[in-house]
Length: 105
Image (cartoon, rainbow, N blue to C red; front, side, top):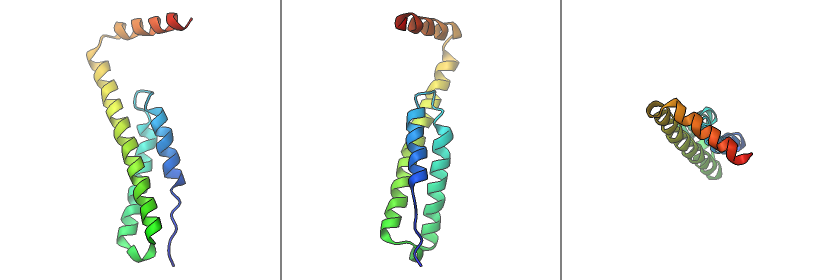
């Protein structure tokens, strides 16, 4: 009996995490579980190769790749945000925020 794999959950988490990377890299909260789920399924498929057909293995690999890319992008953006916060004075952030508010009013 061949097992089926539905990568929809992993894809949804990864795509939402791409969108959330704009918020200081907080998409890592969704990207990490997506990658862990895909990686666990990949390990299961490697341990039991007879239980999975080639299309299912391809879907698992693709879902893992998408989740890994989302995780990397969010990690880089989170590190960049942390670096900016650590090296810049808070008043500079507040000035930029005020300028952006004035620009859009």
